[in-house]
Length: 393
Image (cartoon, rainbow, N blue to C red; front, side):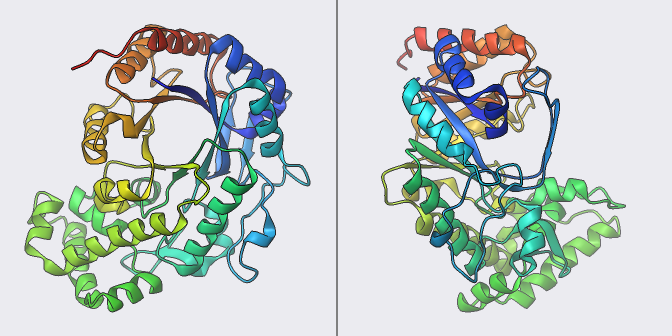
């Protein structure tokens, strides 16, 4: 293991004291890097330990640093800066103190998942199969969104001494969270859920037309399966692979979605030498993120702890490693507090397993949310993972 790091929200570091927080992480706990949220989705945070005066923190989706405005298109999409930042720039202070403490800085940017940005720029929203906007997700195929994300990456990698930039939601991956938040009288199966997550906005339609994909035929086919599910009819195909094998139009549209994500990552990759890491979710049919194709356009991947503790977690991680080519190309995220991580021994074992499997970096979610005893859990996990040499296979 080359790097152990905490994911951090900048307001937690500010409230606790940037110098005190980073000194504790570097000295007492032993992490060698911090990944600081630069842009976030909606936040509703209840702190388990006392940090400053607030126990509850709520923010709408926003940027939590001062954007370098001239880098963004004058008439295009620009970041929505959080009100608490005002005229200050906490990320600049954190960067300076991290350098003083000798720990590396990573920036963590949530790209397309933003209810605030969709409200400000509704024309850039994903649109579902019925023509209704997806209220939380910008379309990665929209030219204005792509220009905005390129400027965001350039801003962060140029103005801050980053070791790496992590891009989360730089894809179509709105399906799981968006669908679970929408009331529906039917429990949709996996095929219908995937189709209902697909975007058919004007930008996606134009891309389909350029690629000679009959988008109207794709829509008609997809609606046939969705309406059948709404009538509680059994799905004719048990898996999405089986459906795509017999429907050339749906297959072509799926491949176009993957191409859209791949070219987005290719086009926004920073030239500065800062490592570009992509958060990837396991369902390619929803996200459009094909790890095998993306690996030539980025420096690695991040498997977060979003589904840690489920029976599928290890299989998802193994699949990403297989597609990425090796474990060294995948950073692993671990929760460091209950209920996802039940004990100190469990965290030590999980970090040890990740280190022994060849993962170069292990991240812990999240510094500001961790109860006081769980910071000791992380200290023990980092110490043990670093002490044990990786066993050769």
